[in-house]
Length: 208
Image (cartoon, rainbow, N blue to C red; front, side):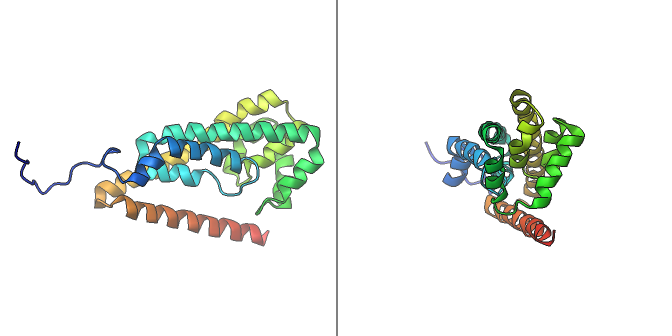
């Protein structure tokens, strides 16, 4: 059968005809990475999984819900580990978290004040206040029981992950439709946004 004549219109981009790295990112390897990143950042890592999730939302927005679920699951495991450690040995657990890069004494004090003022609701407000989840996890045994804390972890973490994915997904879709930018250019913009964010955030922490 003869080949169809060229139309001058590129076929729509789908996961099947995407570059291999996008297939890996949007597929099971990317989902597994989201889980590991959620676990790592919930314990001793210092870069949020939002970086990965927003990248998936930028290149394959319809598939990032699995990554959000995986990152939330990783955070839940991290919360359980830190809660158990702090319940047995609060001093050493807090000391270990305090040594994580960019964790400040002001953050530790803020998290205690938040628990005293709001109780379990502090876990929901933390993701939007710039205070890492790991601080709430390690302080939780002094204020709330384990089961309510872990139950609150799921919506508390998932809500921010979902919001970040929606923002990046909508922005990338709009740019793609408006200017027909390829994935590589969108990824470059994504990287620039996060570099700018962390440069500002870490500089702000350095001043406090």
